[in-house]
Image (tube, rainbow, N blue to C red; front, side):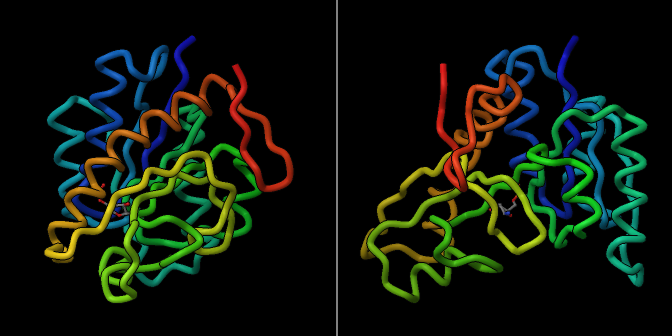
Length: 202
Ligand code: GRF
């Protein structure tokens, strides 16, 4: 049986697209993207999913209390029998209800070397701070912002001439690469958790 991935996004959807490419190319074997859910109408990621023939659902979040909203999302994920949930530019914190419902089954990609620079505009934060190395992190999701156990990180050197755009573009390339790797590891259960540490097994 193929493992079923549910993707949550709010915008552009390039990380979703990278996951879809990896599934199609067999880099994430025995898996399929069961549904793509957006909390924003008109999210380009939804169009990208539709043009790939992947099921989509827009569930507007505006004005809804966090858990009320998350229960609607969870119902759609259940309906599509999602084994793993991948946040891909999903601009919402998850409720404790949602996190408890899918233990160690929610991943996120963040464009910094966490725990540095959580939150928005991480690449700009990194440049302004003056770090010499930036990067990205795939981590399990808990109810705190960009905070759960780390599965994979990739390092990107900051160059003197970098702008927010140029650095973001190099980080994004690494995001697309490592997110698929992390999804494969988690779907194949090739890891064990020791405290906060995610140790890879064979
Ligand atoms: C990415 O930089 C991701 O790390 C962050 O939001 C951005 C989403 O980009 N969480 P995209 O929608 O996947 O293109």
